[in-house]
Length: 84
Image (tube, rainbow, N blue to C red):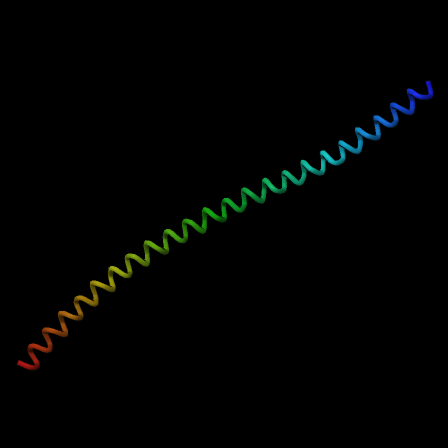
């Protein structure tokens, strides 16, 4: 009878230790999962900002090309009228 009590105590201690480490592992996993979702949201935000900046820069470069072309035409016309 005494051996059965010691076995029950040993098994109880083993289950408690395993339960403790399982709980800690699950808490760590939950933390990693939350951080993963936060990182994904941040990456999506950065991707969106990059896309918007790229599109804006592309538009501005196009506008600068048009302005430069207009300035070149205006300079040529001024040169022709000033120096016949």
